[in-house]
Image (cartoon, rainbow, N blue to C red; front, side, top):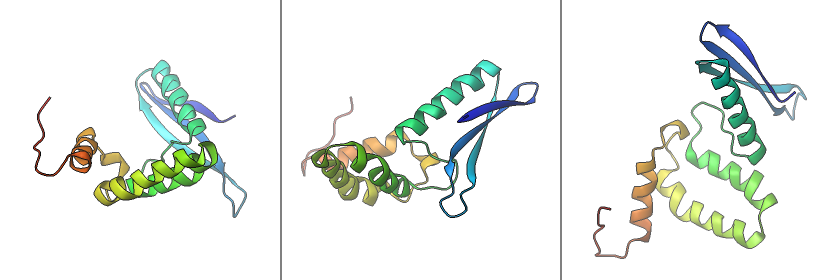
Length: 133
């Protein structure tokens, strides 16, 4: 089983995900995620988390930075699953633009505004001011 739900209190559930095995000890690694609300909410969240695991984009809650995530994504997902040319293009964008601008921000604190500002700065010709849309 890759994940299951346990009831914690009247309106709180805990999701337990199997996230692989420790390469050194060989023991199972699990990640717990709390969900407030109904069991249906917890089941929906479990489905989302399993989908993220399948796509290689699951991030453990914590202090992981965008740089750490992107490096891992390149190594574990992009290079094995994409054409070399596509992975190379993604790696260029990540190393040239995203990591220098946003790499030290914890994943849990990244906001859409961070990305929008970085895109505007990276792809705007010099001397041209951005127009609000």
